[in-house]
Image (cartoon, rainbow, N blue to C red; front, side):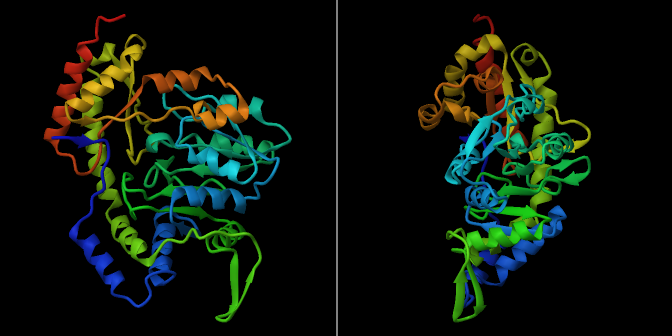
Length: 377
């Protein structure tokens, strides 16, 4: 038995939806793209959704639609998938990394102010694991300095912030539909916004910058790309979206069981967990634990033992500035809060295909593995 940290849940109705789309004459740039975008708007409560072939594409298009260009800077978290920074570099901009809140793994908002300078264009928070950042505070800071906010909500489809769906508050937000996310289009992502001009620009970028006056007469007004998502993928996404809340409920059930067990002996001396505040809900894309300081030197060994026991633990994330590309570009960067979080974090399996027996097995195995290191200082 091997339990991955996340896994897609493809059911018979999803397969039927995909097969129906395959039987249509038009299998890309068709009606199902519009239907999926409309459903996303209804779910999040925004006016515009632009689906794309990945969240990476959506980030890139989002940056460009917000006007990011040569000599601009973004401020973001180093605890994120590399695409958050990579796509800003693709626009000719530079990246400044803020500190990390060592409790939640989200951006440390108090560290952003000192990074703001005349080149700063966009603040890019990341909702780590599905837990929303304090968006009101970020928006207030952005407004004070006349900056834009692009929320990398790749982990957070279905999460809420003060009773509002994540994706509603920022100038634009990006979601991911990769296979390991709570719902999937195999690969895929979307940019959501209430700003018509941002949506219009993103649509142009998604499809080569082409706008059509007539079927035979088109113009290319901006440099664009092929970031389109097919009707077949959108058919799967539309089917999956109808089940998102039930998928999250199952993940929440597993997460709450972990919460209850990991607060007991011997875990309370070996690790910390991230409790979701009462005014937030999480998609539970990840269930992170943080090893106690005396165990961090043994993290690789703990990880290997869990894997060999059949638990697909994972690590999220190596700070982006530590990749060789960024070391070559910016030199050595040291952000202690990011380093501490990275050295402590492990993600446990938490997804809708898990059973209670799976969760029991993970807790008992984690206890067995960690207690082997309890007295190693």
